[in-house]
Image (cartoon, rainbow, N blue to C red; front, side):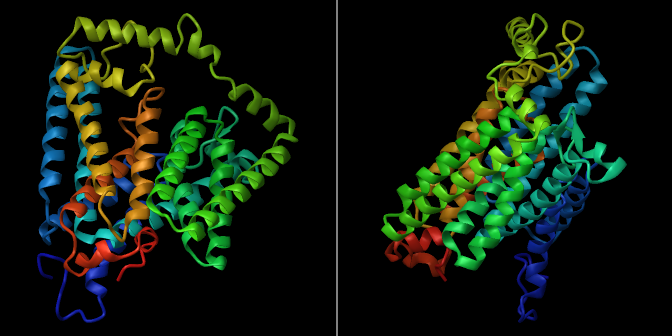
Length: 423
């Protein structure tokens, strides 16, 4: 195999397709994380060195991401050395470092395999989303007998995740991808993806995750706005509006039906409130965040992942406060810089024509949703967060190195670019 994963003795493209298939498999396994290391982790640890040995290119963009991640991790190690429970804090930082490596890997993969790589990630993610959603739905309605308890927590669907608040955001990316497929595919394909979308949305609803619901709304809204702004074709816009109307009506009818079940209605009414008792109580989430702020101001070099002990009993449910406490002011600023540059490179890429424009919009929109959700939950160990971040960096690197056969892209209608129909 040559350094670029292409082989002249491979006329049918079987060898060159293997790396794409491997990443598809890694993503298809990403919805099962009931134990650690999860299947996703094992596959990544096996694939990363293999890809590097066989010549996965490392673009300059990935080097910058690597530098930012290294700075963030380095100061997190310093902070861990200054706080309580050093061993636990260091293990936390080690896991974060592995997830940063996932981002760098995805950046390199997307840069090299371009639209084909993005679709492999998305299609594998859809498979994972459907499987974990079905497990969560089945568990919620108790159809799996004694196994149902493995897929629910506190009366909320969690699929093959440990927490409903991680399960729900995981479903947002494949859900919006299904919307995109419904807009751009044939009628039969649109019906298929509509059914898949229904499964994902039902799983997301039964998670009763307020953050997941808001993430879906915000990410979908941004994606729709960007799709409309990127495409002046009235037929495309009309189809988008039609599908959105049908989707809203179908979702409303499904919600009314679900709320007819007393257990669903009661929990929905409770979870639909803006704040819960554990948010505003004296020892609740908001009080914990105030304690975290005090610790951050008093410890510029951080206190590690267990820095809130012994004064508090849980993490602050705000990833930005948490990481400023872990790595101090320098570590927190490295992390913020990583997020800001991710958004900057992502939007810069959208200003350039590309056959993967529509899918790129999904990743960038969902990254914004995840960044916003970080205000109310700790996302620093969410595998899918780092996959999305790496994909956005890869999209930015793709835009800087257009393929030779796409030099005519400026002359291609914007709607064709959005649909990914450029040869």
